[in-house]
Length: 482
Image 1 (cartoon, rainbow, N blue to C red):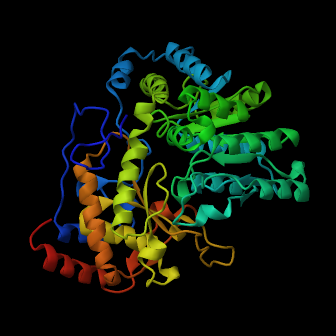
Image 2 (cartoon, helix red, strand yellow):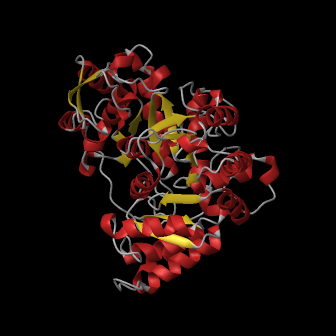
Image 3 (spheres, rainbow, N blue to C red):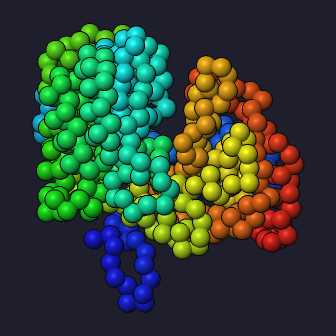
């Protein structure tokens, strides 16, 4: 197992892999980091890799592939139609999920586009355990409305609840009773709630939601992009599942769902995605749309080399020692931050460690984007790129005012098998210094703001000269150290 007992008493995770290919990293001076974040409009999405030491923006498309995945790419069949590569991938999905029909797409949000166009109409409601940015945007552009039916504990940053991602069953039943099944386009569960700390969903919750959806004739869709982490948490935290294999848990989740879609940039560790179902009518409807938006049915916008690697990656997802590598390193990071008194989302979830910017920067006005300011400050102090998951990631209200996020998080994603323990310890050290000097950090304001998904391209500036003050304190404490 990845967690073992050490004679010297340390509590650290153990890598269950060895590194055979390396990529050079640079840590540019703090003065350059200030220039870089200003050039990027204090938006970490707009930083260039040459200025980044550790890239913790996301785990999407940046996980390390295994030797077997890379080797598999050499046997890809690049036929435009009828590719043997597609057949191998289709067969692997059928084996693991027991679903007959598969539609390949270029990534997860392409699934959301197709499914929303097929199922959502003006006035439709889509209940879910929590929204994701692109999911909400696709549903909205097709006239639907997202309703977040999360339990109260989901937004509690300090918690021992093992499944904060569960859907609120009472709220779901009440919604159906009030609005009627016909008003609901589909029910969606995200296997690990991205925007509230990668918090998992229990198998019991999947199956209860499934029964409600089928009793009322409402499609039940699972976003399985973060399924690997969720499988680990179900196995570790849910008493009824401790003796089940990862394959058995996967099959139970699949049996509960009508449609599963996923980004392979997370599930399978390649660039692509897909939709799987046993419903032939759904499949044929989506099949007619696929060439218009993605590509022919046997490649769907994906490289066949990536498809071969996905086949291997999905099989590796059934290996408990592979899927635990993300969660155990995230747990180490969260536990160390908690020990240091730094506000971080607990219990540890999937995807990454999530700093609670609401508490970290409680002196910064809510309207000055605490999570975005913390992302900017951490990059300046460390060269580590995190991702704002707060109010900047929300859309404005109809009257132009900010829709204040329920939580303000700085996500520090830990792509699988990418970072070493020393790099994680360096990040913890710089966060600790930043927390000690948090009162120096001020807010941000927009000077260039797109109307949709502004967190991708929006540009902001500090509301004062707090960044220069932060650098002065850094130089006083660390001297010429980077």
